[in-house]
Structures are given as structure tokens and as C-alpha cells.
Image (cartoon, rainbow, N blue to C red; front, side, top):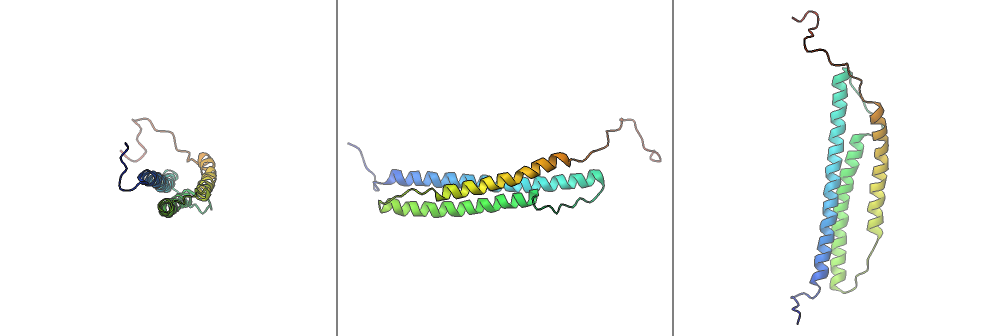
Amino acid sequence: MTKQGKNPRQREHQANERTFLAWLRTSISLIGFGLAIARFGLFLRQFQTVTTQNLVQNYSLVNSEILGMSLVIAGVIVVGLAALRYNRVYWQIEQESYQPSRVTIWLISGVIMLLGILSIPLVWVGRESTPKTKPPQPSGYLPKGRY
């Protein structure tokens, strides 16, 4: 004989919870990538300013700060959608009327694809705009007037 717990739909609720946790991990990854991209872009801009001794202004519509912030916002939205989906599926399981929906999957996939496409110019332009630094001087080199 099999022993049923207090809730005969326990397996369905646990599967729903695992799905929610997978969406939560995805949103944490999006937020983390967004923060990393935004901070790395800031680091590169500061590095370029230091090496070229010129203040570098980036007023481009597609830059690392905007892409990073977009990923953070997308991560926050994914958390909200995951919570709504979890709650909806919970009640559908309780009412024994579960109907799978692919709208959330298509929505999240579209947003992530759009953000990925927007990152292509950053990679392409960043590759061409790396600062040209002076070659390193020999270790015994002393500039004039500094000895």
C-alpha cells in the first residue's frame, strides 16, 4: 500500500515550487549579470580616461550602463512574473484545473533575446575602441628631470 500525505497533490505543489525556484535563480543571474556589465563598463571608461588622459564621455544610446540596468530591471520583472505564475499554478492545482501557459516563456525569451541583441554593438564597438597605450619603458628608464 502507498502512503498518501495530508495533501494528495503534494507532488504537484513541490514541482510548482521547484519551477518557481528555477525562475528565481534565473532572475538572480540576470540581476548579477546586469550589475557586472554596468560596473565593468564603468571600469573600462575610467581605465580609458586614465590611460589617454582625456575625459571619456559616452552618450551612446546603447552602452554598458543602459544594458546592465536593463538586465537588472528584467531580473526584477522575472521575479514578479515568477511569483504571479507560482500563485496562479498553486490555485489551479488546488482546484484541479491546471492549464499550462506559454505566454510567460515567450515573454521572458523575447526580452532576453532583445537584451542579447542590444549587447552585440557593445562587444563590437568595445573591440575597436580599446585604448592604445604606450609601450612599457625599460626598467632602468628615468624620465628627464626626475632623478
